[in-house]
Image 1 (cartoon, one colour):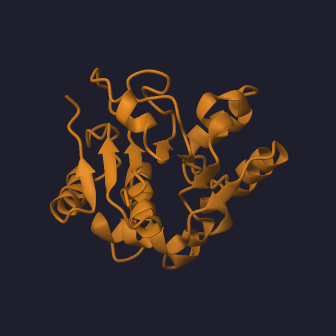
Image 2: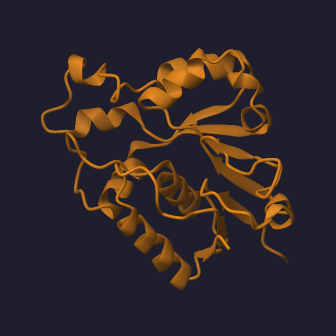
Length: 204
């Protein structure tokens, strides 16, 4: 019996057309702004990870067309990767002023309310997956002013826990915002590739 196929699609710019392979997958996991959706990265979305901390989610919540975005409209499940409970695990826990700072604000309650009012299925990713992502990038626990695990890393860890079969990974360049520890994240993806848990497809 053929195992269901899973595709995890990142946002690194590229020109290689992967649309047929991605759209043929039973589950298609996308991240944030979904580079190549409707083009080189296919047209289907079953699971959508939307970063729920900081200014990006605030922009989405302020956008009257947010719910009409193709990935949001078609996703069977929307996942919020940063569980608010992680702020209680900092030592000492973040105070109210720190939690409301623009770059630290966790918009999970507001995002859930907005999406569920539109009939969307929304899930907060459990805090233990955030802790595992912290460990991948070199932290034993969440810290103030730490580098952030990327949405893609959290999505991979969630997918590895959710699905037994190998995960095809497209569109990951491990480059971009300097607040992530890309080399450590790349090392995990490559390790999972070597173990057969992931099939890491090059950008070109």
